[in-house]
Length: 139
Image (cartoon, rainbow, N blue to C red):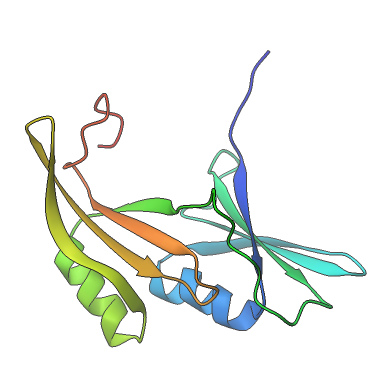
């Protein structure tokens, strides 16, 4: 059986704010939409490819109160070439910085990390490209 990861879904309150955050601030591309009577799903990816993992932003039309994040949710992560520059650019655009860039050491290996927050309160981890060592999967 061939299994392939395709997307993660977030429920959002304001599609305009969320799409602006992920497209204009995080550099994703809007690759599709699905319209239902009670909800609209927006699909974003880092590249326009049928194989690219996506972020699905679901706007339930009747939802007016913020969603509960739950105890199990933590974050999604993106790699960036210049952590300090990326965080500075996001901060200039009014993005909340949850954790300023810092170096963390795990098993004698240093990696660079920061966290920002999207318009709905979801945490986004930013990892400096080439510093994460998890079986060398993040290059």
